[in-house]
Image (tube, rainbow, N blue to C red):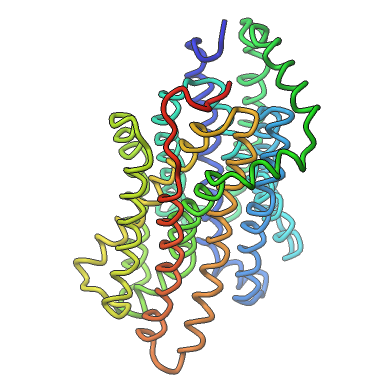
Length: 423
């Protein structure tokens, strides 16, 4: 029985999405307890910033190596191991007696998180046909958006009702359990029902081909492909601008520029999250109906670029009614970034999907690391001129980044069904 014709593939899909949902929630959940950590461990704001950065730096730095290893040895081991590692890091975080353990825990979380999306893409590539794959990527993106959503009001209420350690302890145990569960779903059960055995020859052929090619040869070929850089810049433009700004300056922006309360400013993040949740399934559905990716993606990149430019044109303070629309728009663009991996799957053979997905994902999270830092330096530079001035010039950064995303979408070479899909 072949994977792509088996009804069991939906069990795999549900299990993988459950892991992704919880893992994504732990990317931003620590931000809910910043003040508690500073008080309990007597640490500064800069230390908190470094604590956040180490997680995303580990994530971004491991994308390409994980992609190479996953292409060579298969995605199952890395998805299972990454989920368990993420759970272990979250578990240690809940028990941390000092800041050294906090840093170690977030490093483990970042390393585990680095394995998830690339291998999720690879697993869906193996279990689903290309036409199904595009739509399911959108649902996977929605699952991630729901994970981010869980790390807002629900997780905050849980922390308020107990203490900050109990929620992280529980989620850590749950993630390690899901990792073990994934072993049975992805490895043991398919062997028992005879799905894996039908692909032995194909797997052996791929393994043999990989052995003949050295890593540097694969990387040289991948990095000289225009399509690789197109996906890198697409992700750089829509993911990093959203994640970087939402995760660092969105709440201070609402409080300082619009005199909003912390709670009210947090609603801006919620609006962006709703856009992200809708962006994945809706955009992939549209592209499936149109049977093309480039034109819809160019349109999305244009809208995101216009959104960030609007902040700049209104001097960093657009009318309040427009503000919600802009946050919804940039959130939608982040959700629609699932198209990046639809382009990867459509354009490259299976044996290269992992490494190219890693390159593309590096673009998104490199942008997410750069934007908060550069934006902060701009705010510091104009500190004496008032918050509006600092944000006015700060918005130049996401405008430039989103322009690069638009250029990336224009560089995409549309591949027709059946072209270069490799199996």
